[in-house]
Length: 101
Image (tube, rainbow, N blue to C red; front, side, top):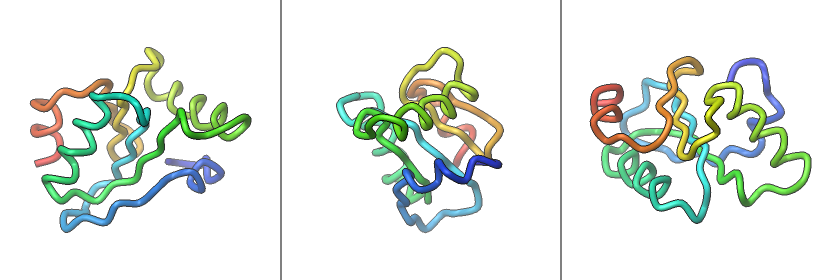
């Protein structure tokens, strides 16, 4: 995620067969659309990193939320960041397929 190395410590890594892109998913543990996003990434064997923002506490949660907000000012979940640049806000299977497969 660019220069903000502190945030890296909060990301969980999912190893997939299809690497190639740096994918970071900002999600909520209770969000059905976030679950769909993770299922899509898993089913397509994509490598990605994710964080459940709602499971972080205090400064950690604030820091990660601020980082997400820079990329998605609407602050919607899930937010998928591709290669630190492109952002897909919300779960949109067509956009996921177009961008990732």
